[in-house]
Amino acid sequence: MAMQVGSGGLRADINVTPLVDVMLVLLIIFMVVTPMLQRGKGVELPVVNQPEKQSDEGKDIIVSVEFVRRGGGFDYNVYVGDTLVDPNSLRTRLQDELRKDPAKEIYLKGDRKLTYGSVRKVMEICHEAGFTQVKLATEELKTSKG
Image (tube, rainbow, N blue to C red; front, side, top):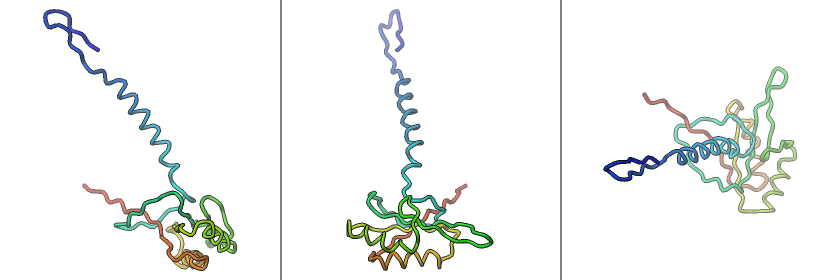
């Protein structure tokens, strides 16, 4: 706080240092927490121009299909949340989840390097487990303006 001594009397200025300190701490907290908000296995999602926005309430099931190079070809791994699941046991795992809470929805995150057929196999397993709707996760195309 600054004071002017003399004929003008007292003059008070606002000290912004505490405000700047608080804002920097909040910025650091958000930078650390934001990457942890991603649910499921991290995969490179397909890019679209205008994706439909969905609210994520945290109770939905995230099934991720990850691209994996094996030998001279490729294969894929399937995850429920962050847990690696054998594709043969995926149906029973999803049926168990659906029995626990029939209101749960399923989000399918397919790696953009995979073929449509690979992701479709996992989608069919989700339908066979009893989910009538499978939502596909995508990323928004970032265009540079300038």
